[in-house]
Image (tube, rainbow, N blue to C red):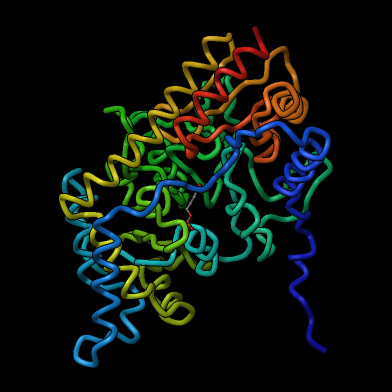
Length: 410
Ligand SMILES: *Cc1c(COP(=O)(O)O)cnc(C)c1O
């Protein structure tokens, strides 16, 4: 008899997006003539940059000839892409990496979810709250999160609230935690940490022998000077942090699938007897066994992002989204709502007025303004009382949505 991994049975269903869909459908049935604007989408909408399209077409043609055909590639990714990443994403920020510290993958969701394979099941976990659900759920699946308690929190997870009261800057824990997940710029709040604030986390990690999982999927959206693009801009971070990057939001690769993970060679974790093991070796072994590389065509597409044309084209798309974010932020603040994020990230974290709950505000916005957001409480207990709006829609929809919200609240 095959036995199931019963940790999966502890996972509550993920009802957030199906609950939203149900409420939206009910609205549509009762209001067939109204036009809804969706500011809840977590996917990009701009097409792929032309440079990527051309590179991928060319790669397809190479696949058509025996002399230029590519079969299995290196599990870690092709050197042409790894070299471009080091040269363009890290070297200009004073970070030196060697090629075998970079692992190309099919995206940051898989890597942030899979990284737990190389760590014992009984490490303690810390997360900022609200949070990208993958970090917790992937730990639940291997039993590392413990049991779900009455308050909706997992017993082996420390939640670090990020709310307007602390300006969305999580407090350094007063105890030691083995593994901490940080995501900056943040999904869902759109907020960032300054270099000085991130340094406190690196210092904490070095002092407490904590491993930081740093998700920088929104790095390309950073506009302000003092916001770190990589955790390795902070001295000592190579000894305590793994960094995840993605081309999904940067270059519209959500449907193409490519990202990468940095595991520095000096980063180690311990065995029970105290021996230090380099995590780079373990992750390499894990990838070589369970992953067979990102497609050649995809990696050629990703490489093209680093050409002068590619850089200009992804910047145009990011500028488009960030213009939406400005339109929304200004529009919402003009009617007296409090907004956070939206400056270095394509997300606006909107505080519901008068202490209203996330779901109540969601429904009011749906019925009164015909605008759809995402209830903040769906991202964790500290998200209660907030709504997430994304800047991934069209300019026209953003402008129209703000007019409707103004009319509703005026
Ligand atoms: C979108 C997103 C990712 C990227 O996931 P991919 O698998 O690369 O598409 C990673 N982390 C966060 C927080 C995200 O919002």
